[in-house]
Length: 296
Image (cartoon, rainbow, N blue to C red):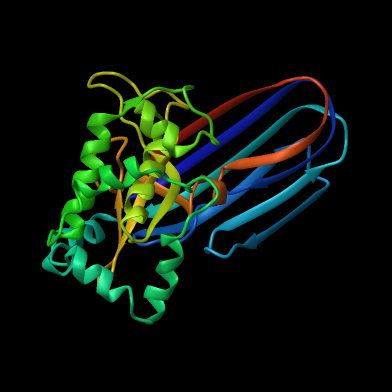
């Protein structure tokens, strides 16, 4: 399946900004079942300095600065992706994946194979997923019971978060502690992904944060609105002996072709779509528009 993705982020400032420095994680990375075919970024005003590198996790990082006065910053990226994830997703239902129990997973994590060592960093605390309370561990233990399949436990955890938590835009910010989200049982996709990751890490298994997009489909008989798609986040759990398996607790589903990956890391802090600092006074107003179109 070929997709064209347009992502526009606009900051309007009350007062002129004399300088800004930004980091963008907007260029989709190569990942299982996904290939980037084309990509371009347009910045207004034109950047005075810009560079691109690949970070520790293999994500594309773009750094740019604008060193002239401006009252609006507009960043538009256009990507063309080939997404063929269905065969990879089908492998999750095989015995190779579903047959690995919690005890077997923990035992395998003691080994020193390259993939295990790489995954073990995702057991550790991170900037936004740290100091989790006993309530997080207790919530995880309800699904991750002795002798149970890790895949089945993770799938049930996804389902429980979907049922137990309410999607409330604006209730949280990127820095809201996970214990507060757990207490209030409300938030948005990044919160639900990070709650799941905290649960999985609390019982000693690796989990990572996935940043990307999700294609939205209009109700039957209605046209799709331009800009109605969205940035999205979900989580992935490492099942030793099999590999990484993605789950989307916001939509209660295992991601498919409609989930497009931008990057992954320990939590939101590693892969924000756009962040930066500005020198100026006054407030800013943010607007984000995402449009995903199927080419074939």
